[in-house]
Amino acid sequence: MATRGTNRARLLLVSLLVTSLLLITLDLRGANVITAVRSASQTILAPFQSAGSAILSPIGNFFSDLFNLGNTRERIAELERENEELKSQVILNENLEGELAQLKGVLDLAGKARFKTVSARVISKGGTSTFSETLVLDQGSRAGIRADMTVISEAGLVGVVKSTSANTSVVLLMNDPAFRVGVRVAGSQDMGVLAGQGRNLYSLQMLSASANLSVGDVLLSRGSSGDSPFVPGVPVGKIVFVDNAAGQLTKQARVEGFVDLNSLGVVSVVLDSRGNNPGDALVPAAPRPAPTVTVYVTPSPTSNE
Amino acid sequence: MSLSRIPLVAGLLIIAFVIQEAFINRINFFLGGFAFYLAFSIAWILKEDRSTAVLVGFISGLIADLSPTLEAPFGLWMLVMTGFAFVLTTYVRGSLDPNLSPLTLSVVTAAASAVALILFLIFGAILGQDVAPLNAVIREISGNTFWSFLLSPLVIPFALKMHNLSLTARER
Image (cartoon, rainbow over all chains, first blue to last red; front, top):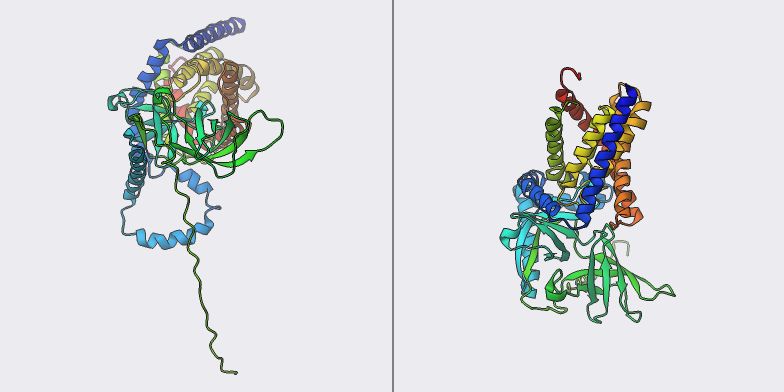
């Protein structure tokens, strides 16, 4: 009996593994059915994701905030003071205000470049079991979004639209290991390719060995043919480390992204660049140095004298 | 497993999948994330006999492959979960106490989640998927194991309750 049970389990195992391999082969060969199935699942999931987003927005960062308590001790005193001023505001409005600020920022950026955009809220993220860095937006093909469109936030490049359904879009974030974008250095115009590394640091490989790189250089998207998937001139990040090791064919560097991909609430999808190339116009302004305060102290005569 | 249980098991796995995609994925876990769906599936598989476990592994993999945010080819989770369910029930389940204590089940679920993620990554790499740098992968998997160990005790009783409800009178 046990042998029969074991044989049945093995037969079932082999047939199911063969089915899996068949489906993998079909997908790798680009079968439309499988793309349609995933798109349909996204359409079905969208209302649940919107509901989840609405419910979890105020508490979504609870765990990360809990773990950052040690690092933010210095900020507590400052925040307590600010808290007194914020008591008059309704707590739930803070979330809306944050989204509004992000929306204003991204519209400012798109307006400066004169891009035609559509704004969307982030309703979900890729799970840990997918090993891919993705976001789900609450706007899809009905709003004019198509695959291979550039996604930006107030600070710069976010990623590229991977797929769409009627009311949602899946965005491949720029920190995904599969993500590659052509970039140029603002000013010198040297070109390179930026690759995602799974977090907020990116690797940059220049196309030329003679490229002149230095820490702090700003990188902008180079733009693609027909502006798909990338429109030109969008801020990507700044160089934080230049690898000057001898024997390399081309220069390499480490780049820090401008956009905090973990705290995105609202983003914009560039529907049409209208043929505009903003050049270096979107380079973020350098932080203004704080004015030095000079205090003059006049010694007063003491009673001992 | 009687055929009548299949829609019920698939339905419960779909509910777990929707909870993962719509709610759990929205939470910023600081270190990695919590694979609720994976923990739920593994806890379920551990309570089944070998043939049923393989079938449940296949169904759970099929549902995981439907994730629109997945970059890997369709069928990869199916392949991993089917094979892993067989290994779990043949080699792991057999060497444990038949009446798994909740603590043992939590530890086994957390460890099995980590192994399933590693297998998914290895098979993905073999099929030509881009893999994140090693430190990012280690961070993701160790974070997931940590959260699985911490939060599995909340998931497992729910999974076991659902499992018992899904059994026919004869199977009980």
